[in-house]
Length: 190
Image (cartoon, rainbow, N blue to C red):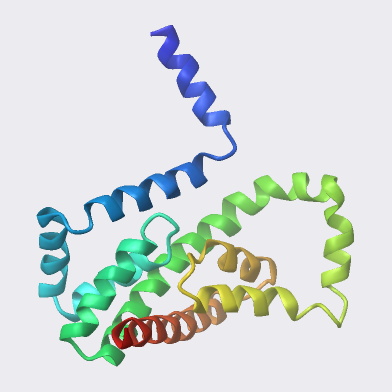
């Protein structure tokens, strides 16, 4: 029992657990991508049509589920209208992004702010508040959200830029829908 407690504490304090979980989830997904159970799950989600695209859009925004979500969206767009798949998945992505946005803004930023400021963050904050760089954080955040990369970093950058909730929701929908549409069309062209 003592060994289990020690391992649990070690896991909690390990700085790279999210990276390890990402690599593990991608490895497991790619190892089992052609397994009948995975194919059946993809087919099941596909049988929901555009509702399946919405559900997959929620999964599209997380670092842990982006790889399987891209595969599911590809298969959905193969059988359904790619633009409609992108729009429904974009709506789902807004739900996922908003949950992450609220979590990051309400919890994580408060935890990390003292660490950031103590490690020279004041200089960066002052730099990015100048007229020359004030647009950079939201722009970088928007690029990340529009890309097929996981949205957490982009959401974090947008969260720092003090967007209002309604602005974030509209921006998230537009960027995710465009990004998903481009990813689906690019995947279909290969």
